[in-house]
Amino acid sequence: MKPFRRIDILEQEIAYYESEGTGKTLFFIHSNSTSALMFKPQFEGTLGEKYRLVGIDLPGHGKSAPATTPEETYSLPGYAAIVIEAARMLKAEDAIFVGWSLGGHILIEASDRLHNAKGFMIFGTPPLGNPPQMEKAFISGPSMENIFKPTLTNKEIRNWVVSQFSPKTDVEIPSCFEEAIRQTKGEARILLGKSLQNLRFKDELKAIENINVPIAILHGEKDSCVSLEYLREINTPLLWRNEIQIVSDAGHSPHWEKSEVFNTLIEEFIKDLGDNG
Image 1 (cartoon, rainbow, N blue to C red):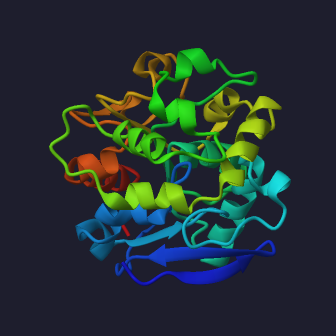
Image 2 (image 1 turned 120 degrees about the horizontal axis):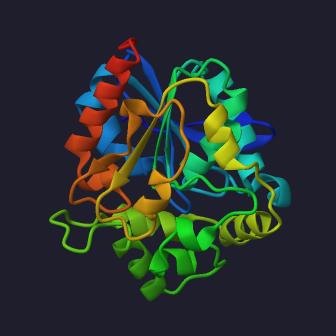
């Protein structure tokens, strides 16, 4: 993983990372209150050696600057605008876009404007109608209780991080997850929550139906945040392999907890798209 760089996008200073690979481009978008560093198992493994992986820190997250227009930027439309312009400026418009949790929602919001995308992969992301059925899509717990709070106690942060992994994980939970939550501007969480309450996002169920390239949906078998039953009810015409891909013994962070399985699925998706870089 190369050292991060900065670029000005829509009058916003954004940090981004790239892997060492030079093959097909994959563009990664992280979850609420984390950063692109959460994709280290992809960027620093064989996937990153073979392909060109790009990941940005959303405004107010990681190494990126706080939003210059918080009310506008800390929302799904605001983040989507950043991603679309970042893809253009970083010559990644024809990438395969990978979104984790909030990152997946951002991709759905941006999908009809990422005209050259080769495909989409989302995980930890239940597409929402407008208005959303939050109680059906999500499972209540430490993660859902804290995702829109401006300030968090050490205990709340720890509980949030633990909830991102399967209850009996054999993986050491990395300290970078807690560090990322502490680093995130609290304003980003609270304004995102307000924007969702005000229904400032497109109907994701309709958007999924209209995506005209293959979309892979992955789900950690032991995800304590997202309902698999809800995911299976969604109409996704171009769903990869015609079913949700289950990552066994993984929670909400299968890309870290079961990185080898996750990376293999990405490679298989690339090959099935007929464009392996």
